[in-house]
Amino acid sequence: MASADNAVAGRSAPVTPVVWGACPAVGGKAVPAELECATVRVPLDYREPMGQSIKLALNRIKAKVSRDANHLGTLLVNPGGPGASGRNLTQFVSASLPDGLGERYDVVGFDPRGVGGSEPAVHCVDPAVYYKAPRPDAVPHGRGAEKALLARATEYASRCGNLWSWLLPHLTTENSARDMDTIRAALGEEKISYLGYSYGTYLGAVYATLFPSRVKRLVMDSTVDPTTVWYESNLRQDRAFERRHRLFLAWTAKHNDVYKLGATAKQTSFAYYAMRDRLRTRPAGGIIGPSELDDTFTVAGYSDKIWPLFAQSWSSYVRQGDVKGLLDIYNKHGKQDADDENGYAIYLGVQCRDAKWPRQWDRWRDDMTKLHDRAPFLTWPNAWFNAPCAFWPVRGGQPVQVHGSQKLPPFLILQSRDDAATPYKGAMKMREQFPGARMVIDGGGNHGVSLAGNTCVDGHLAAYLREGTLPRQDTSCAALPEPRPAEHMTSPPARERSDLLGILGVLGLIAKR
Image 1: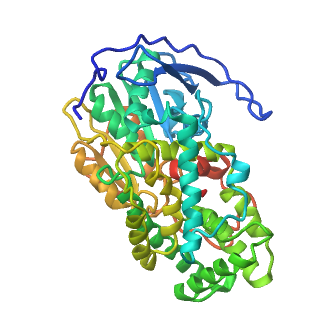
Image 2: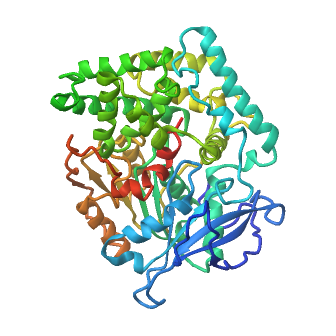
Image 3: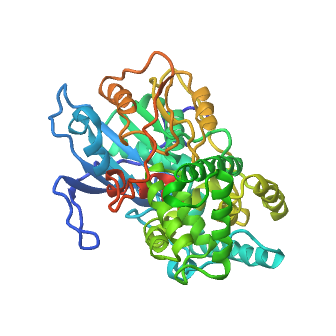
């Protein structure tokens, strides 16, 4: 794929300037006065720019300074997924940017094609039926159980194909990157800045490859390996989540005086899987079976801030038979609704189409069986989450080969050392593709390291967004202190109150199977 600052076929559709207006109320909630909304039309197929178009939903918090030397332009934000709503991120980023930078950037969020407020918004099944708990155990116990899970995956793929055959061929990361450039043009900007999390880093890399001269600033936070999209990247993610889950088990053992679930990681691991096995025949509250437990505790792989609450809920269930804590964390972090199903449909639509997937289930079974022995926490749940790609009605293509360019300015990569969702080695692969980039490594393991309380990380972010200043070489920041058991969080932390835990890309999707 050539680096190109032009349209696919040498033609482009006329771009209508964005007209901002008041945002409609959603769910009866008041909309902040400073938040503006708009839509932008983009071609369904960029090879036919004058053909059918679809709509993208945008929102914005405008800079408080005038367009003079203090104004830094537009910062486009994306939380990842694919399938997450960028409009949910706008207010948080604008309010959280350090050094008053939120007052100097127009922060713009957008719902990618098919997502949320964009039109059409893709749904493939009735979420009340599809997600009805308890669902079948994601770890198949025998071929009969596997057959039932396979039927679920094939049905989802078939339903999406029946409903959206005209759209599915055009759900790709490349098209989303081209949509970004249409947004840029509609905003009247010659160049844009971009902050992307998780899958949003890959989207940013594709944009930077296709439109290098349109980039002003680029920040990747929690970075995808661009060389393993997407089947292999999920296998690597399974191994990374296993390591992260064991860190959680070790932390729980370290505080055995509080939780009394075991004094060693081996003992807490036994307690965890004993609980999971019990839930197969006796779902907690009649709702939380092993798959619901998987959905919920996967979130602990993304943020250690919730470890105390999760460990306490687990302890109360095991030691006292109290299901309230488990139900509470499931309802907050694991339960799925129509928005989740929309995100799931787009997640599959993009990943199944971006790249080739094995089409023979025997390959999946062999790979997962071997990996489950070493990484039982996520291997099978992750496999079934992605299994519709084996039967997707549109076959995968060739992913964009991302790379640097002399036209692309140097940019910033932020990455935690023990990130489970986007493993560290993958970030290093991204770094190799863009020699002009610089990496700041957080010593912890949380997914999404900027704007989360680490002043060292945020200092590098501020310097770059303010004046383009990068460290002379890759550098490190110390991790935030690990949580303490006393922090049982009767109310969620500020980061969670802003709903960032629900919108950081994979955290809003893979963590909510």
